[in-house]
Structure formats: C-alpha cells, structure tokens
Length: 301
Ligand SMILES: [Zn+2]
Image (cartoon, rainbow, N blue to C red; front, top):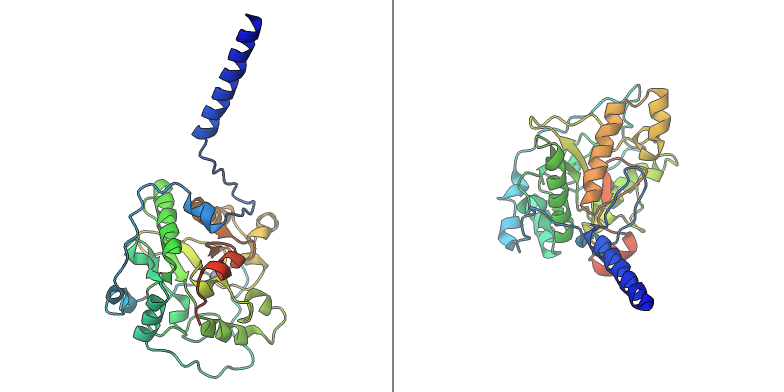
C-alpha cells in the first residue's frame, strides 16, 4: 500500500516537471549579456504574425522595384564632444561603382532577397549608397534595397514585430546589409594604414558576415523618419559606440540613459528575433556565427 502510494507520488512529480518544461518558451534574453544562438536555434524562435517567406521571382528583385527608390541622405547624430572619424588616409582612388541593376541581379543570383519583400514596413537608408559615410565614397551606386539571406529577412521581420509590440510607431531602419567582398576590400583599404581604425573593419581575407548576407547594420526610426538618438552616428569608430562601455559612459555623462535605453531597445528586439549582438558596435547584428555561415552560405565576391 505504502509502496503504491510512493510510486504514485513519484509519477505525479515527473508529470508536473514535464508540464513546466513544455510550457516554458525557453527564450529568456538578458539585455546586456552576449548570447550565442546558432542559425538553427534562431529559426526555432516563435514567429508570431510574421508574413510567410515568399519565393520572390528574380524579376521582382531588379531595380525597377525597390532598388531604385529615392533615398534621402542619412542624417548623422552628433555625439557628445566627439566628431565622427572621417575617412581615410591616404586618399583612395575612386571606386568603380557597378550599375545598380548589375548588383541587384548578382545578389538575386546568389539567392538573396530584398528584406522589404518580406516586411514592407522595414525602412532602408544604405550608408554606402551615398558619399556621406566614413570613407567618403559611394560604393553601391543608387542601390536602396537591403539584400540579405532569406533567413536574415525573416528574422528582420520578427524583430520588426517585436519592436511594434512595444512601440507601434517605430520601425527598423537598415543601414547596411549584404556587402560583396569587393566592397569589403574598399572599406579595408580605407583603414588598413591606421592601427586604431583597422580594428573596426574585417579584412577581406577573413571576411565579415555581411559578405554572406548574414549580418545587418540597423537602427530605429520614428514614424516621421527621425532616427532615435543612439549616442553616436553609425560607423563611429571609438569606444563611445561600444555596448561593452555603456556603464562607463553613463557614469561619465558621455551617454545619457535615453541613448543607452534606445540601444538596448534595438538590441532586445533583434535578439528576440534570434540575431546575435556584438559588444563593439551598437548597430551590427549577425544572423549566425561566421563558421556556420562559411559552412552553409555562399560568399559574395
Ligand atoms: Zn555591420
């Protein structure tokens, strides 16, 4: 009798544990702690209200759709007492810009999609499609569409849903997406002579996740197109742009609590969608670790 009761209690305990385990969504993300999710893990995250991935016909990726939309110049924020680092020494020869149709066609051939074909509320303002960037040169002609892996596009749509859940009037604004290695080479050439600056750009030999369409640079825009104040401009090459120094700059007053909160909001929604954040740039998010990208995806030359 006692033994039967004991087995009943053990059974009930196991059942209770199983119920708790299945009811836990298993995704508890801490804002400041780096997390490591593989692409596979990320794809298992809940996808509420995400439009389905459409196998976009190649013609829809060509420039008479989103690739030629008018793009306004990227507004830059003035960081506290620090000017953005301007380019590049020595002076670079002008980059031979490819026609936008050729570039869009190349991305489509490599299986990339225009992120706005998955979620039309994603905004773009590609920094390297205009000369007002850290190397002072246009690298993408008038490309305005954000080309990424289909998986990256779906994750961006999830992040947008997560953002709208807390701030319906805000949108993600994409600053750089897929980046062929020939463009990576230009960025590298702009900084390689400066030991301080070259820490911020991956050399083309080792490559960046942007070279697979598996990374995005992104910020948040309000409904009028104004960027949230993140404390530095995009591509600011200094400690002030690095999330690992938030506490230090909060204490010194060089970052305000609002600026840090804006960065944490961006980080939170991107992580909720499965992106990996890094501790050296508030705007950069990876779809998966680089080893996985090398194994699974094509390099964009
Ligand atoms: Zn980046």
